[in-house]
Amino acid sequence: MFGQAAVGGSANSPSGSRMFRYEVVGLRQNEENDRNNYSIRRSGSVFITVPYNRMNEEMQRILRMGGKIVNIEPLSAG
Image (cartoon, rainbow, N blue to C red; front, side):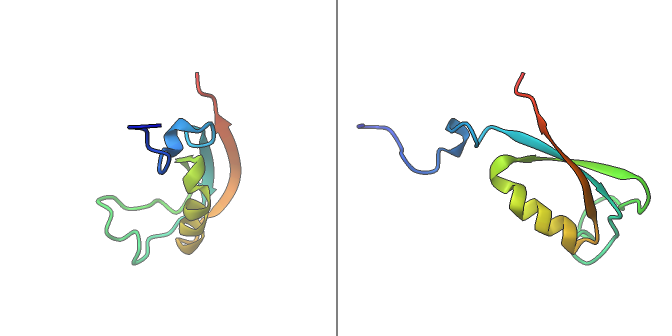
């Protein structure tokens, strides 16, 4: 076990490398995303790719921005 880190290696676990794509509608410009260098279009779908370990954080961020998640799909590894 010498020289091996047991903490913080989420990318080495099967769940850490899994990616998911959210399809989001209804995003609106607000204080939180106003710092972006681009504006958000209110109509149409936006696709956001998220690692498994950040899914909950990203869902909360999308809801705070007024968006609605209409689809979540896993992305294949290969």
